Image (cartoon, rainbow, N blue to C red; front, side):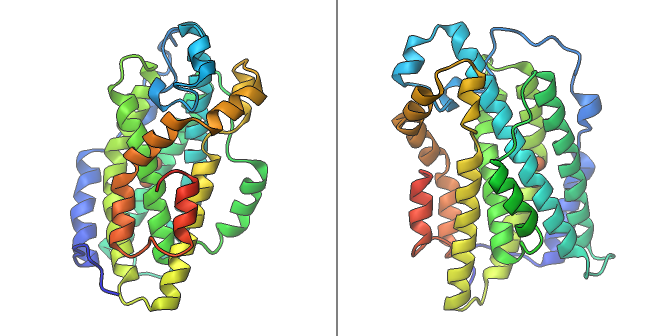
Length: 298
Ligand SMILES: [Fe+2]
Ligand SMILES: [Fe+2]
């Protein structure tokens, strides 16, 4: 099939994007005030992004009680982001292994790995500073990632990387602006948003290039692989342990979070730009649709 998005030459894209790190790169170890106090009354994330927001349980909690679960949820999200960044760094490094190192494409990919390295340290340090557990995905998914990380490649790799980056981006845009949120979460979100913008652009164009000319069979494989990764990332994002660790009745909290209409609508609305892109390159269709529906992106 023909890529419907405007895809420029690979070297042209990389040259343009390489100019961006030169202008906007942050060293979180210097940029973030790691010694700043952690206020008791600030949320870990924008309350409207909490999986409990709007539930009966949420309404029963006092404002102080609402803060703790949002801190655990924020820590869970960024720990899963960190896990995924490690997988994507592996993918990028495998992708450039056989390519010409003088090419701008390889140099941008290596720059992206450097960005992601700093992000991962930043997420780890932020979770630690907020006194949160080091969540990461479910142990089973973590194990699978070890194997899957070894052959993750092609259009679907870039599509799912872009999807994970967009999903994090849509939340962090709200966290960054929100004065009710922990200053640390806000700073981390701001740095991440700026540096991810070029990664998202890079991945979008790679998806367009790599999907171009795909026959029916390959398109089905790319669709299913992309949807499966997006499904796993979305499902992993909030570990069920967060509720108990925040001092809530886990059974009730999990049940109410699962049926939370507000949360599902928020995901669907915020994810519409991502889904439009995936659809425009032909990656949404067939059984993959069911997977997106199950994580409320469709
Ligand atoms: Fe990142
Ligand atoms: Fe990224």
